[in-house]
Length: 416
Image 1: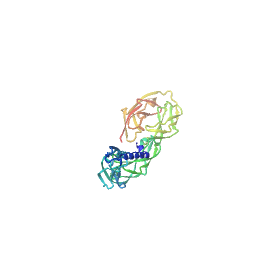
Image 2: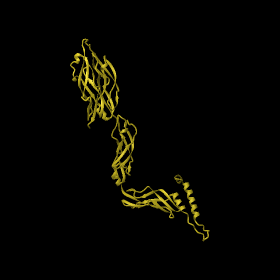
Image 3: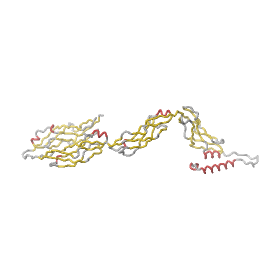
Image 4: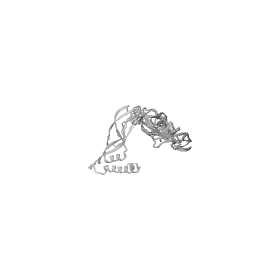
């Protein structure tokens, strides 16, 4: 129906039909004076959603409380009512040209309607508030969801251009402004700087949107994205015990440093990465290709593999030298690599010591004591919680040993 009403030919044809109906309702002059003139048929129609126009000083005032539309009931001759319903050539309005600032009750009025038709408006009157219109400048705060940043990258401080906007509205609304935000939307896993137009939102202290106008309505928000990386040394950690008669002279790596990537918090706690060399099966000079071992939270390391060159010294073993086995008890556990603001408690073994069964030449084994061995628990990169951590034992190179416990259960607590 709305599309037909927009067609000028439809309006013209309808007007012509209405004119014919009106003409036919007029009594003929040729009728006798004794003929009775019967009034046209009466009808009542309700029209919904009639727009309401407001007249006031838009330059200096703001008006609230006026409904966008009202319902109107028309009563009168059917031809007049149908014409008004079809053409809608009347106007519902509120005249506030002489209104004073403050709250007041005003009547809705109607004009350009045939005087043969009576109209009833719903609502017939409304409570309105007339306020002074003011303009004030506010600084824009950028909002950006950092969860959209790829792991291993971080977002810098957003830059807003322009960083101030002019906001116009009722004084009461301007006084309620607590936040002027430009929210940058993105669903990507970002690895590089992003720059986009963002709409302005004006909110009160409870984050309710305020009915004000903003100039400009959008600003440009730029968020710098950079990779979190750091260069650290590669440490060599020997595992096991060299075979009898073999002494490890040196172990060298073809790469001495590695580049690691991760969150800023993890990078701040990580001072090195490591390569573990199992010397228990090395009997001659050799070159090994080994992985670079990283701690939890590191997302990338370069290089991932390095070459370790091992140089040994093989000594003659005296045939008459007898082998001996000895138990070295209560070797204390040492904790290393614990991050700042963290404390660690050894849950198992509760004694915080381990026992070693040592085998080797008699004159090497006889005098061994707990101080000749080092049992280390490396907590580098570990965070709050309970962890099973491998116990790393080092000691004299001319003996072999086994431990009564290979791992320790550690509870880490954050004291921050």
